[in-house]
Image (cartoon, rainbow, N blue to C red; front, side):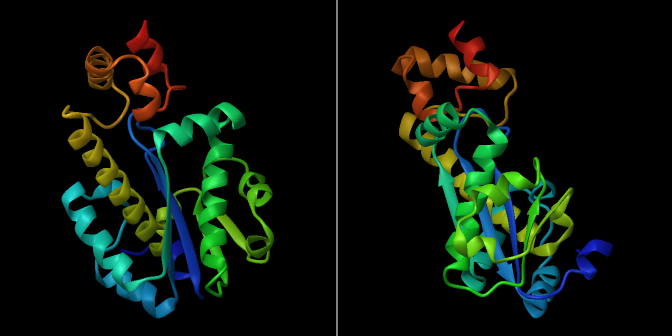
Length: 218
């Protein structure tokens, strides 16, 4: 699927997107996928589009295909690391920028890029300030609804698949249903976890600066 914006973006492009930002439980995942013009056409032919419009089952299938065929990088910030970073940085957008910069640096160290495109989530200078030497040499564009660019849509799928797998791993580890999102069902699951494992469990499984934490612990 392509739109007007997608059609005018050409060259060897790194698209970046994230998953888990709005979920109380689980990791924050930032992923990047590289594709040139021919690779972008293959992504469109495969039906790659914003992960929010695709089921988890299809996400896992498409992510496997993307990671087998395209240069990519995935940064998974698990809950414990996330909480440590948030305590230090105290700003979610800056934490996101840190993760985005790691993806850019990982790929830029090995692959020549013409442009980096990120789904816009905050001030433009957040990512720019977090970059190191390799990343600073590459033009960076941050776009509202960046998933209109197929490389960003591919990154959104890879990030979402990694998040889905992380959540499935926690379910297996703790033997409890752990819902996505941040609604009332999340609060109920949090209370069950605290009853079973004690209050420290949330530091290991959730993003404790969310309002859900106070509701659960209160």
